[in-house]
Structures are given as C-alpha cells and as structure tokens.
Image (cartoon, rainbow, N blue to C red; front, side, top):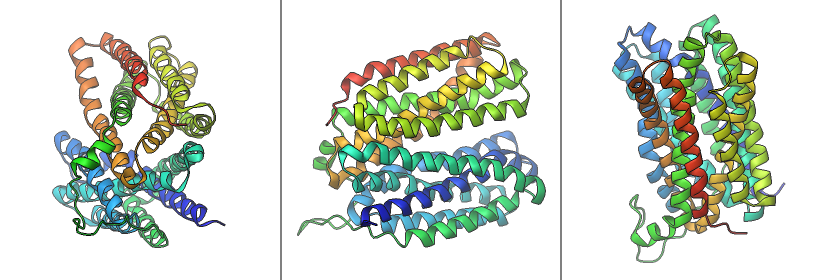
Length: 394
C-alpha cells in the first residue's frame, strides 16, 4: 500500500467515526436539553446553535494553522476537544456547562472536517482529487446515517446520556487513530514568523481569487437551502401542514441521505472525467428543480423521490466545490482555502434557518411555505449563474 493511500484510509475511518458520533447526538440533543434540564426554548436553541457558531469561527484559523504546522497536531487537538466536550455532556447537570461543552465539541469537529478535506486534497493530484473527496465524504455521510439509526435505539433503551458516553468512546478511538497520521508541516522560510493564525496579504491574494470567492458564495447559497429550507421549514411543513407521519418523514430524510451519498460518489468521479463546472451546473439544476417540486407534491411517495433528488444535489455540491477550491489555490495554502470554504458553509448553516423561518412567518401560513420554496429555487438558479466565475483547471 502506498503511503498516500494509507493516510487516505486513516482519514476515511476517522471521518466516519466522527460523523457516527455526530449522528448519535443530533436527533436526540434538543429533546434531551428540554427534558433533562427543563430549559426554556431560547436556551435549547442556544445549546443547539452554539456548536455551529463556534465551528464557523474556528474553520478559517484552523485551516491557516494546518498550513503552518501540518495536519497531525491540529487533528489530535481537535479530537481531544471532542473527547472533553462529549464527556462533559455525559456528566453535567448544569445547562451552561452543557452549552460550553457543545462549543468545545464544535471546535473539535471543525478541526477534523476542515483539515480532513484539505489533507485529502493534498494526497491526490488534480485528475483524481474529485473522486477521492467524493468517496471520503460519502463514507462520512454513511457514518452519520448509521449514527442516527443507532442513536435512537440507544437513547430509547438506555437513556440519552448513554449516547454521549458512546460519543466519548468514539472520540477516544479517533484520537488514537489520528496519531498514525504522518502529515508533515509546511516549511517555514528563514527569518519568517513561525506560526501565525493571521495570514499575510500575500497569502490572502493567493487564496481569495475569483474562483474561490465565487465557489464560496455558491456554497453559502446552497447551505441556506440545505439548513434553512430543508432542515427547518420542510419538517414543519411536511408534518404540520401536509400531516405526513413522523415515521414517514424520517424515511424521507433517509432518502435524502441516500441521495447525498449517491451525489458525492457520482459528482466526484464525473467531475474528474467531464469537468467540474459541467457537473456542478447539473447538480444545481437538479437542486432547483427538486426544491420547486416541493410545491407540486403533497403525498409521501412523490416527496420521497424529491428528497432523493435534493440529496443528489447536495452530494454533488459537497464533493465538487471543495475540489474546485483545492484546484484553484497553491498547495502550501490549501488548508486556508478549505477553511475559507467551510466558513462560508457554516455561515449559511447559521443564517439559513433565520432567513427562511422569518420569510415564512412574514408571508403567513400556509402560503409562506410555498413562497419559501419558490425563493429557494431562485437562490439556486442564482448560484447556477455564478458558475461563470469559476475557472476550471484541467
């Protein structure tokens, strides 16, 4: 086995375990906070969003740091933070300690997701990078899917606190695993500063080129759709307005996950063969059509197919845009480039629910739901127009 493939397989296993831990907690976290801590809805929201907010703020400096010192030390530090955060969640009976623990956990996961993408993109050359990133992220999504399924079973039979103890064990396993990484640090020029989390103007010029900026804006729009529309508005619309049973809606979400895995694998492979712009354009077109079709169908089976298509769209975006950015920046600042991309992605995840829920509330019920889907389709068509700003390196 070549050294590069060995490192790649370690990253895949570590990423799968990290996503498995996230899947174990995500479905049960908000009910756990509400029931165990008798917390008001504002604190429940703070506990949920605290993970995402600090993760957004941490992505860029973590990417810069990985360019300076290499992937191994930040990966180990991140897994240690996730270990501490998950164990505090398991033990604490104080709501503020729980919120702090989720903040710590979010910073730890930001380290793995950001560095994992940039490190995998370094291992492979341009002609194989898309499929490598696509497979890497598809396997991670499978880990999340398995975690969601197993997490519900564990919480129902052993109590939700056991989920956090399982996550502590998974974090420890991943920490031991990343110690096997042999990634090396970038060379420091004689007389230069040793480590700085603030990039120089020269580095920013290399990173913030037209392709990176356009790709980040496209990703921001896609995350507004993914978290704001599909993750916030659609569940309420489907279960409250269309009266779809929660079990059937869970199957719809599973269909979306299957579509995401399919999109990651197909998008990464085809972008290497047929060009990244062409495949990304196809993915955005599928996404715009899928969101629009949410206004046409009101029963389970057609919506299951629409959710699969929406997952395909997100899988293509999630695999092709990181490859685009990795192609567009020099190797020595690739971590900074991926950190920039993930910051925009987390920003979309943070503001998307606020934008879309307020839009529905302003327009009124039930027509607000339909208009939010129209707006979502328009956003994706706008992202499609931005593809002209992407310069493809073949």
